[in-house]
Image (cartoon, rainbow, N blue to C red; front, side, top):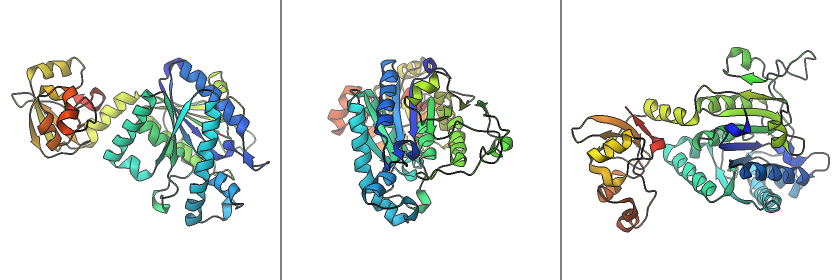
Length: 369
């Protein structure tokens, strides 16, 4: 994949890259080089989201604890200490490159419950529009055994999915996917491109796990499955050198997982095929024409509301004659929609005393039938 083909990139940073095991300290020089890479990407108009591990490793160092000896409750406590150091380190490195960062803590539940994932998506969109780089981490402090992601590999893929990113770069201490485990086979080759994760690909997975992290190739392949279904390209590459992203796009060896569809097409397929509509909107002729021309659905074009639904639910879109012309994710609940229907978007805040957005259904959340 060429850098020119990307618009929104998620960068996953593993614990083993941030934390120098030899000196037992944060790898500050490497982190600054990453910030320099991201500055270059932003200058080319790219939007960047970071998913970072490292909180537990930094917390354990601060408390003079060994990571392998930590149980769940201690992991959670140690993470709360490490998060402060982690974000402080990112803030310092990125400020040197005139980049503002923010912190977002997520759990599996946040990404799998539709309304929470929609809220997370909109928060990420807002931060990116403010020219801020969101830094996402699993919320280790409240996550339990049942909802933990592991070393953030799968979290990164879910963040790419909910944010409709077109590229996910997994920086790790391995070059990519090999034909067999590098530790057990001298006659191996690096797989440079994967378009489908089948049995043959899964048999290539080794079982190695880094000392400072929980993720191995297995979790990366699981993440790749999610990315491909989301229409997102995914690269697994060795990020141990300085300026790892620049190196990747300059041709450093890696494995690219290539999807068959775009993120937007994958999202619309998900909306159309996985959820049952729970209500409907009746729209006027002007709104019908606007939708067919590729516009979003605004409150002004809504004539009436049918059913009970909440923000984020799938609803049908009907013409005055009650013909179904599309479905989409509602930006407002049924009760809110009753109040704002027929009104201009700039009147929403006055009517409701708040405003989520201008659109009743955004064009990216809408599928015409």
